[in-house]
Length: 289
Length: 289
Image 1 (tube, chains in turn brown, red):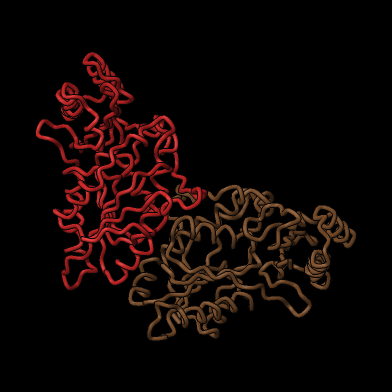
Image 2 (cartoon, rainbow over the protein chains, first blue to last red; image 1 turned 135 degrees about the vertical axis):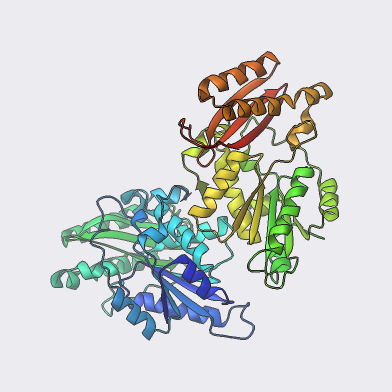
């Protein structure tokens, strides 16, 4: 496995690669990220460009992107565990780790930005102004640096997946986007770098977010359609347990707008604070006829 | 020469090309555009990736981009001369003409936009709100469709060249940008598709824009530094001849901001209406020590 820090080194390393799988991360890698690298490799092996069924090249980027953090968010304290991360990548069979410095990514202030549409201002975007613009811009830059055939993102960041998938379509990027299912702990908690902020007691409580979403999903499948009432119930139940929910929202899975009673492809999205830690999670569901 | 109309056809045609030169146009091709295709070929022949010195593949796109026209501008009447354009491309040795339909370029309304910084709001941008955002967005889409090694733009659209060159740097696009000198008629008039709008009498007057810029350039070289006074003189002289200048501006060539007396790399930019036709032109200059 090679570790490169500059765009020039990266391009030299990737120059002769015919198919490239790419997993952008902010480091502090957990089993969810490693699962994305496995999925990247799987997609390379069956990719139509891969006539000789070669393993291709899996690239993981590690870059904590200041552009997507608000001024009061945890950019400074975000966990940076580079040696541990590269060890995990090596063990997982990753070919290249690309870890640019801030000066390499932003040699001058970033003035050219990808401006996503209204979806950037709802849900997590309403809580984190500029977040999705920062995500879209850095991912476009990383795409242009790596030029991947396949890129893999985790659905735990569901709104991010939608923004990036739409961006790839609308900007005609020649990249196959793969949106991978969330990896969970045995008790249901979605794996996240921010779980490391939780105290032992909070860690015991944390799976209740997934439990609440699962209960709401069950009610939807059972035929309930009063979305606002169901959202309010879950919000109240979490508040009673000491959570501070930012939103609990039933949305259409494709555009994250509010569904009508006739919509079938839904997603339940949640963001809530437990102590000082903000957790997000979501559950997709497809309603039958 | 092949003419393709869809992204799928284009990608299939270009799949095995190692080096690609790209000249994006809105059609109505003149000798200036054809010169850009020659320059693209020249750059492919000496490109470091071109180890075998093959001729490579020169692609011209023809697409009148609604996104960069204001609601009161000439999108509807912009000259569309496709048969003539493809004939000129063929004669010039172009390999591929890519002529997408509006439905191919914008199958759904374009919601993901490249937002350039303040430079998009000055000079031509002040007269044409949204113009450079529309240019940047369509060129990024075309870049992602064609994936060129080299892209060539004419300096007649000087502000556009600066916006696109900055965009390529800031978004880390793996493309060599070539900014080519303006091709002029014998009387000095910069070649432009919009010259076709001029009456015979206007065509005789039109070179006065270049003449005025040349005179201003001479004064700068002679040591004058009162930029505002020189701009006002040229504006008044053109107005006396019946022109309606939008701006006559001496700027720094790299960022198009107002120069200090110490700046050496300058450009004089002009936009002015002659009858119903809006013409633009510019002249670069490098002042000695």
